Amino acid sequence: MRILSGIQPSGKLHLGNYFGMMKPALELQQKGDAYLFIANFHALTTVSNPQELRDHSRDVALDFLACGLDPEKTVFFRQSDVPEVCELTWYLSCVTTMGLLERCHSYKDKVDKGILPTHALFAYPVLMAADILAYQSNLVPVGKDQKQHLEVTRDIAIRFNNVYGPVFTVPEPFIQDSVAVVPGLDGHKMSKSYDNTIEIFGDEKKTRKRIMSIVTDSTPLEASKNPDTCNVFALFSLFASESEREALAARYRAGGMGYGEAKKALFEIFWARFEPFRVKRAELAAQPDYVDAVLRRGAERARVEAVKTLDRVRHLMGVN
Ligand code: ADP
Ligand code: TRP
Image (cartoon, rainbow, N blue to C red; front, side):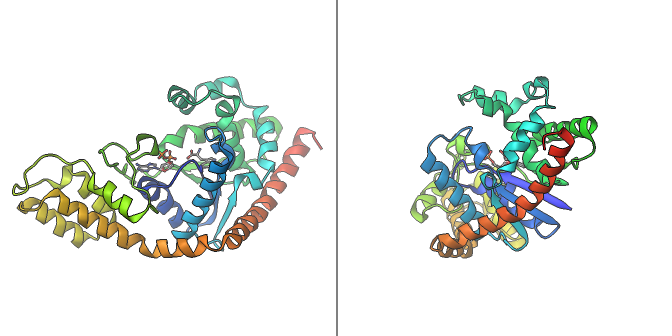
């Protein structure tokens, strides 16, 4: 079974990305033939500074490798290193109706947020379909926000197969409802658009300061507190074992503990959990040639599959 997913290099990864996307993606590498790529073509729809795009792409590669991506198990590559996806995007565009794309709410949401309504932003789901179909993927793990894009991919694959013959595997989305939304510093969904994130590889002093600034209610220090409505506790629970969770919950209920102490406990558990990843990341950052070689090798392996698909598509369409 081929499992494929992509991540846009559009900012520093935060705890929401880690628990919502990275951790599940890394777990899936044990379950099948995993493909993971850095969607730098997609990021061009929102990032126009070339150095920023390069830096973010490198950061995403380091982050994944540091957090446990095994390049022997997972085919890990940069989207732009497989140019066949652009060619496939055009072929797929020829069976994609305007109506299908006009219905996509992600485009409308992005335009409402002030992102330039370019042709690329509008055609974004077709490039995404090409990413998925080029490698004949069976399963695509994504967040809920990408569900509609998967439906578009399936529609395009079915339509192409009907018009030209059965060439594409029709993929299934894999949406993990069990992954709760990770709250940010202000209690809303953690997101780089809200500046409420805790970066997974942030600077120590800055991270401590951000954790100490998490919004809590004004229950006095001596009073009993409800762990179930507290952001600090929700974040702590993501890292803690059952017994650590219970111990902190008991201290909340008993009273006499201020939120500052809970925040300190959160900082400590987070910092300790990521320590081995931090060490690994620093080692990798000092070996840019190794990271480049991993991505190059991944692209070679991915290209073999994309070329096979493209040969068949060109033949079926009469392009070769
Ligand atoms: P951001 O909201 O910071 O721009 P992205 O939209 O780039 O994050 O998110 C990439 C992936 O990370 C999403 O598909 C989603 O699955 C996951 N993700 C992001 N934020 C959260 C969150 N707060 N809780 C759970 N998962 C999240
Ligand atoms: N659009 C996805 C996101 O923003 C990233 C992405 C691009 C992707 N191509 C993909 C995800 C193919 C899964 C499969 O999160």
